[in-house]
Image 1 (tube, rainbow, N blue to C red):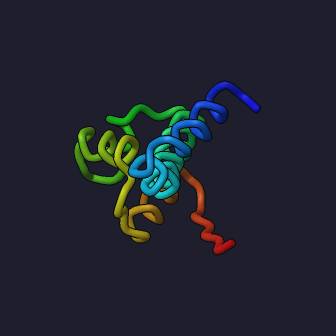
Image 2 (cartoon, one colour; image 1 turned 120 degrees about the vertical axis):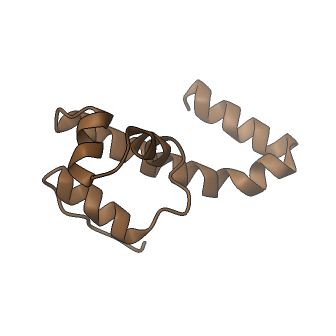
Length: 91
């Protein structure tokens, strides 16, 4: 087990509030990370992606850093601007 996973496991055991919100928060964090990685793989800056989406760089930063409550339609637009398509899976 990595040090990070060990830390999370131990913190969940001793901090009930942390445990209750961790999984949801982590999923939102992962969405933002995936979007940032897709943008970087496409060779775009936040500003370039913002221009393609006709929005501001701050909006792209907010999506990448705080992906909570992001609309599916927004994810589809970002994917299209990156030359990708969005796939949704329920597991």
